Structure formats: structure tokens, C-alpha cells
Length: 268
Image (cartoon, rainbow, N blue to C red; front, side, top):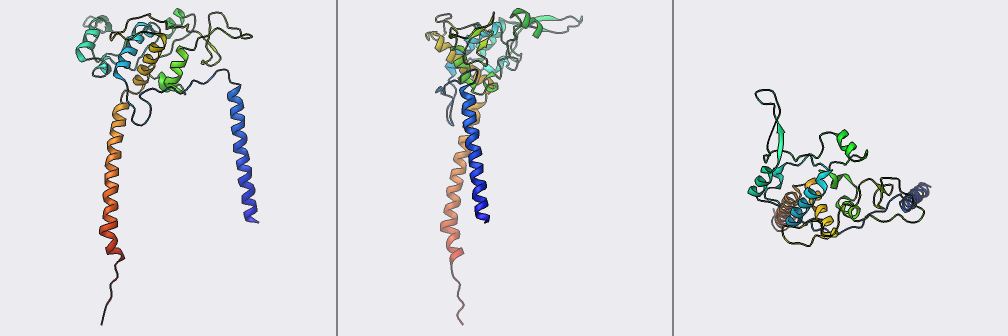
């Protein structure tokens, strides 16, 4: 009787799980947006690492395109050193920027050249100024954007290249743009990337897809700058644990095993 009840409970649980999966698929099929594909970025996987050249190109895209509206308040200029630029290159970059500092001895704020320890300059001083400049829309900070979205850099890449003409029967509100990868299908940000809109330092053709890929890698790196170090440390620990397991198994099998299984007889 107990076995029969257990079987019924198991069957009921399996049916519940199957039903929930069916409902989930139905909801996904009727969602107001489509999910992005799984793109083969080089930094994915257990041993994948960031492409330093792509990070540098992505920073160039952010500086020339994204930085006019989006801030990256969690990034300091020193984060770029030995990743995509040399220290001298970053210092030269800082010399061209001015940040507000103070107060001085007279109690007034003043402008000075940026330093490596300064955080990146924001395009707007307040949220109100940002909304006023963008017809009420607030451009989000991009420091952790690759972690803030479910599909991470895949979502960013698909969104940047996903602008389309609205299909028949779909009306877009004034000031909005149709993008099937954005929740609701309507986004306030217009299409930003066009072929040949900037010149890369390394001579890479600046197609829209190339720029979208580079800035996606850059934002993935900015969300977790220590990812490569973490993966390298994990590989080292895994190697140490493997060697330790082999030595432990050898000691147990060939050293401790005979002592544990031996038979001691007392002959009178």
C-alpha cells in the first residue's frame, strides 16, 4: 500500500513538473520579445579569456558612441591599464579630460586634468538632466549592464543589431523605435551603429556587427574585470587538487591498503 501511494505521489509530481514546463514554453512563445541566440564569444566557457584587442576597440566604440548618453560610474581610468592600453596611453587620455574637484582653499570648486584614480566622467550631472536631454528616457549606467540582463552580452549584441521596421499590425509610439529583442518591442534609443561610422586604431573594418561585437565584449569585461584572473586561479587549484587526489589514491592503494588488509596470526 505504501509503495502504491509513493508511486502515485511520484506520478503526480512528474505531471506537475511537465505541466509547468508546458506553461513556461507557452508563455515564452507569447512573450513581448524574442530571446537572443547564444553567440560564441571567446571569453565564454571554463577556459575562455577576453580578447584584449576587442576590449580596446569596444572602448573606442563606447567613447565615440555610447558615452554621449550612458555613464559607467563604477569604472576608473586605471582599470584600462595593462588590459587594453599601456599606462602612458591612459595617462595621455586623462590629460585630455577635465574633472571637477575641490573645494580649494577659497572654498570654490575647480577643474583639473583627470588622474588614473578618477572615475569615468558621466555625460550628465543628474538624472533630471539626462531625462530632459532624452525626451524623458533615462539612459542606464553601463558598468554592470552585461550582468544586469539575463542573456548578458548576447542580449547587448542582439539589441544593438536588432532594429527593424515594425511588422504589420504593430504600432510604435511616437519617439520610440521597434526592436524585437527589447522588452515590449519598443525602445527609446534609436539605432546607434552604422557601417564605417568610426575608424579603428588597428585598422579593423568598422562594420555595424563588428562594433556591436566589440562593445559587447567591452561591457562584459567592465562588468567583471577580474574574470580571466579568476579562471586562471581556478585552473591552478583544479590542477593542484588533481595531483593531490592522485597522490592520495596511490598512498591508500599501495601504502595503506596492504597494511589494512593484512592478517596477523598468533602461533603458539
